[in-house]
Length: 172
Image (cartoon, rainbow, N blue to C red; front, side):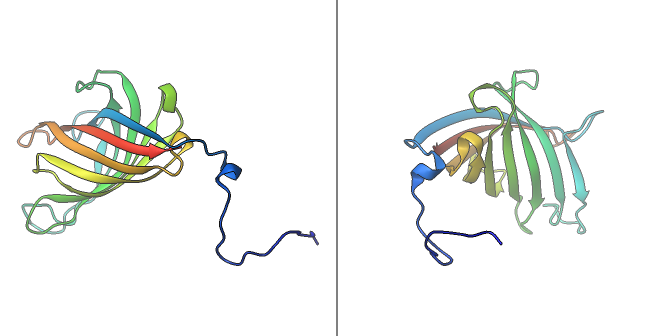
């Protein structure tokens, strides 16, 4: 038996932010380039559920990815993080994806930290907005949004894409 002292606050209770070591909230802007490579000897994205329909939107397709996030738009640019997650073709009449991804930082000030994004990506819109729903490490209690803008897309041969992400995140 382990004796427990203190008050029972029931199911929900307030917690002093100092217990988490939280300091002043920060606002950070991060710009990265997301590289989705579907072909070649080392694809970064693979189909895990093919589209069961003949839909031009590939409705039902689920693709898992582990994409490079670089400082510049070239794949050879400095690697900053990995985008790991999946996207699924979630619309029958337009090309719109459900995206679930973690941006896992592999170097610099945020090395070992993650930012989590979840949302709708209508890829033919010039700018798409996805919410930041959380994070870890330097991004604990993260919230904000990311703007995705297609930099390049080869829709005829490879399906490869490079997307610029501008992330605006509030965190501690």
